[in-house]
Length: 317
Image (tube, rainbow, N blue to C red; front, side, top):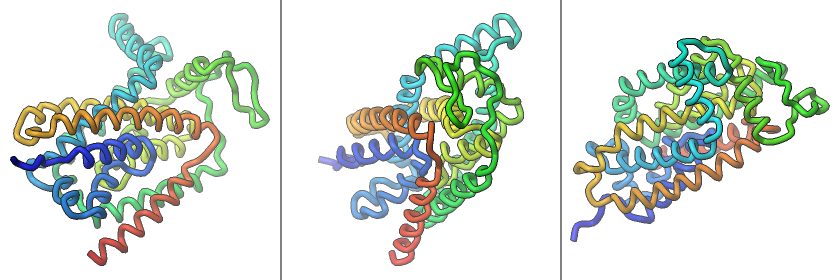
């Protein structure tokens, strides 16, 4: 009997890794390259992103879809408003409401990374999807996160649209709300108040995530913070922006499961996807609360330390 190209333990571990690291600002792609290399043996052989017709790449794309589903479920109320806003805007041929404007901001901001992904993804993955480049970029990701926090330290948070739903303000002048839903709507309204250029710039930061070791959410949050968004709003916008990109990339690649690279790994894909989806949902619950009051600095330290350890390891192997 032929040995499957991907075992169930491998699928579950990588699914868990994907569900967490795709949303934490620490780079899922970098970890997907480094962890198998560290473990070695069959893991290093099976879990290679640079191999031609790699079943591992097909698997990683599939669990990305599970992450996108978790994002949609978690932000389902937002997406109902956003999709409704997009359709009413198309119907009426105008942009009047915050929901309509946010919908179009997300569309426009997704275009740069969509085009870059189609043009560059294969070339970047085949040339840089190895432990040494991933280690270097992981260090650079940490430096980027730390630099963003340092640069914005003396900048005030920007509230683009005054929101009357606040129940009061804390000692720092930030609004708090009568319910979680009111707070979410207020955040979406602030995001809708961004300029077209700012939203496009923040969305384009996702292009950096094509490099293994650079985090999609970290790059997008960093761009948002430098443009004056609060940590809470920057994280929310990063997660909303990531959803269509991750989902579209996954849907385009999913047909490969019916081809040679998907042969014998359907069960492993399902197991890994379930784990990834649950892990992503729990990660979102944690991160949306975390960024209400905290910064990117702990993730910066982690990336720099983990990247340097990885560099030292690759130098001796």
